[in-house]
Length: 301
Image 1 (cartoon, rainbow, N blue to C red):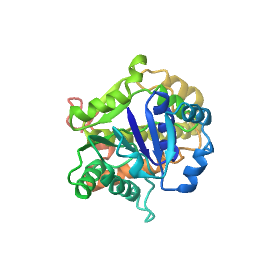
Image 2 (cartoon, helix red, strand yellow):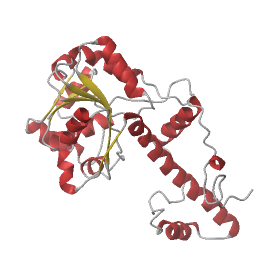
Image 3 (cartoon, one colour):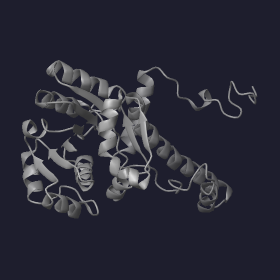
């Protein structure tokens, strides 16, 4: 398959290297000419274990290259992945800044030729794919395309392994035509029996936020338990180990410490909260029916 990736940041360069390792023909595009020049000279803008060697191997093999010219990279692509940044807005209100996503959609639209799947790889809030589709349609009414969502689940320091041996691949599409292209792109993973989860677009967009929010909850929860342990003289490490051995809970992200941080969890949890508020959904814990939740046969007023 022929793949174009817009954006050569963390997600873009890792995805490009790994897709080319799958055997696909990949072109990574960025409007930062200096960055593209450096990449063409073998200079990787980020450090990720194994990434430099993987890039060098696939550039040498003719499966991976870099350019600043969208008009040269997009027309031949079976799929165009948008992997640009989605930072929080400067207003500080927690909303994701989608200006780079929408700019990429508008710039690529005139270059589309033949049927193409345009894929949101960046972490984006609900409804972004619909907006990308609208922008492309308004810019190029004759384009033959579908928009899909394919969120990434990469950990810094383990990104190559996460991409090549993922827990699952999530594909959000509206029709089988787009799904078939993405299944073909990820077909090498069938050899290791990777679950390919095909959903609607909005579901795929929400899955990434839900996953990060749940992991943030685990971190916050074990820190709250550690506070209780300190107050009552209990061992927080032993507690975490014991509850983590429960298969329903799992041991990962149950380590008392300073809390969660990094480039994703803080902005993604706040962005999910903003989505909850925007859609008028109540997300208080007491709104969920549990063993004694309202609506449960065990409910106790």
